[in-house]
Amino acid sequence: MTESLRILISGGGTGGHIYPAISIAHAIAQRHPKAEIAFVGALGRMEMHMVPDAGYPITGIPIAGFQRKAMHKNLSLPFKLVKSLWSVWQIIRSFKPHAVVGTGGYVSGPTLKVAQLMGIPTLIQEQNSFAGKTNRMLAAKAQSICVAYPGMEKVFPSERIHFSGNPIRPAIAAMADQPCTPAMRSEAKTTMGLDPDKALVLVLGGSQGARAINQAVEASESLWLAAGHQILWQCGKFYHEDLSQRLPQQSGRQLKAFLKDMPTAYRAADVIISRAGAGTLSELAAVAAAAILIPSPNVAEDHQSHNARSLSEQGAALLLPENDVDGLGNMVMELLANSAALDGLRSAALRLAKPHASNSIVQQLEGLLS
Image 1 (cartoon, rainbow, N blue to C red):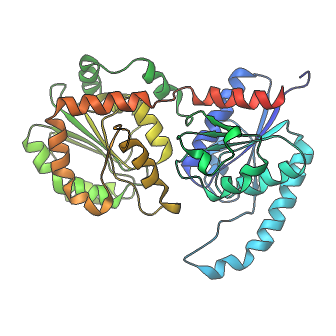
Image 2 (image 1 turned 90 degrees about the horizontal axis):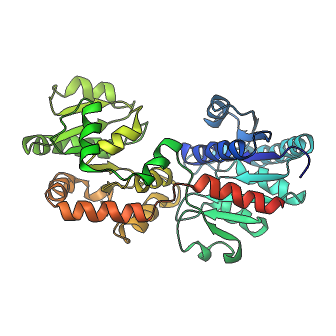
């Protein structure tokens, strides 16, 4: 190809769709420094500021998702869809992409649909073990479908599936090539201001926080601290002020709204308690985590439960449904007392890691254009 490569990327609504899209963009730019990369996002959604912050231009379209809890808001959906399709047609006609990449979310629907109607190659990246509706609808005309879990031939054409894994942050992907030793774990604890000789429970409720996880940790922390363990607790920005005011200071517990240095936090942890978003699970595999997964029941099509079950069935994580979260305290105690179980979870998780997913996806993209 003599002219500069032009790639249009669409996906958003949640970080689970946006982070992979940005990671793919970075990988394209690294492999093709002269490439032109542009995004299509949904007006008013988080991608409209996250993508420019990552260094790429984005154009917003007025598409919106179906509102199950406020049906009256859906009256305008047909008009938004028509306007979005027209906007995408104008974007594509102006930008003239060689291929279009979709990472899911309702915004990628009109973007890839118009591209397919215009005869432009499309690639879908599906993060979850239970495919989203948008990607299922687009799969029939997509030239390549990159997935992160086995068994996706149940919903996608098997001859176009590529088992790439989920794109993750480069600093975390690099950890898969250097598995953590006990000495490295102790050093990471010291870096985080923790005791290098005590087991660490790392709690990840996401940037927003998870009420059920926070409540379970609050009920369990006295048990863990009394046993000589310590806690690094990312409670989320919505819960940090309340918990900081209510809970007394504890020498063995750090309470954070969010964690900036995730590679060091991952390396320091002996056990990780986490939701089961697709991106998070890909990171947990790359860092060889011994994880207890508590899927959120409040996500589309319960995809976190499907994700967590896929790992637990392969011995790569323990699954704790939110309805059973009262058992978290004892579950952590039993796991920390069983070094063989910890090592087994770490080894199984690392076997599932796909740290080079972004490059693998870009290679698939290049294959469409050769």
